[in-house]
Image (cartoon, rainbow over all chains, first blue to last red; front, side):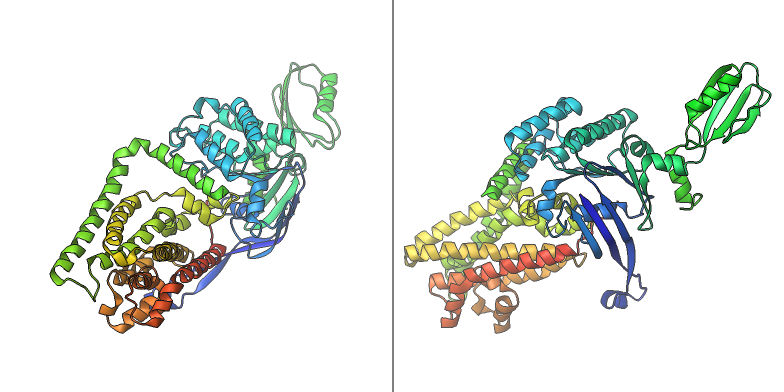
Length: 323
Length: 266
């Protein structure tokens, strides 16, 4: 669906010069490389989390894939088209939501915005009606569809924007921070919706976000960019299992055992009846471990802590995990 | 055709969203009507005193001025609001949304801002032009009226092209509207009056450097038999073609500029 090869984007930034005349007539420019030799490809139906710290080059990549910006060098094809050369064809294939910016008309009721989009994309009436029905039920937009966009809450606006991006039945969806600033209820609703449409329509989804819960709950794969370079590209579960360090099992015993000796399992701390074990998923499963411990002595209570994707990602950003 | 339908859909939405601001809508239109009504009256007063300016009487001056104003106002309805101020849209990265849609950018910009205030100018100008045409028996011929309509289209294209170029400049420089103000608005003002009243270089400038004289002066001169010589007469006949060429040039410049578009980051 998408192939990105040796993609680079430079921004030209004028150097400040105290000599005003020189600044005016022979300005010196500095090239800042925002995207630096990026390679990846996305297959049909994949749900990819494209993450990275602020200023890493995420939005720039998205803007090149959607045809808004022209790459400095390298190649992009989205469903066989080079986005900036075939902008209009590409536009029909993709749907885009910018969390920071609405594509709806500020002064118009939501339904009028949808109607304009129906005309702009030449959406067949039947498809349009079907989609409206679906969005009314799943995104619950019926309650505010007649309100002008400027009167909507952020959560309502985002749901309306998501619906707007899908009206023309695109095969790909780009979501640039779709959950930014939303409360947990709306966030959850939006995640469920993304999963649902992805499954029902075999959509390919690229999502950028700073909320690792988004990635954890809905993305199959993580691509991480920093300083314009791809730092990591692997399945979400692998990020947790391979980079995430140890799982932790906390057990409260009625009568603490003398010792627990299970291969690949360490006793991290003992605090009276509360014992903390650490282990790696690929060596022993949690259920196995629990079974073997409770076979030794009766267990009063236990809790399991998995490594958190957010912690893993933070460790990578901060350089604690070197890839 | 589809684009035309889309344009009217947008205008329909515009009026619906504007229904709440009815007074400001009419006030804007009336202000323009009044302001240009006064200008025509000043022409009338001036010709009462001097009878002609550069050999052109009041109704001839009305045709000259009215042609410039009418074509400007029509291009204003279509292009002015969004494209002339493209500068702010470019610096704020607002074009992103439009670029995501399967329509040309110019088409979307034309659709998205309906320059309703220009309707005031159009109404007052059409009234005065009709009076001028009624007064001047030499204009009562179908060929002249047909030529005039074609020339009007040419004038709209030159004005529209100028607005598009001014807008497109914002892809290269920050303060494009100020540059546009000098080269478009100020220089074009010369063409309010017959160009033979100025030193010769003015006429050369608004013919060969900036084609503003093709908007109204050359066509009006052809229409009224006031071309200074055969060459000027030919320029007048060619004016609609100049309009088409200039408009195509402006689209080209716009497309070139767009390649430089670097939306504002977030």
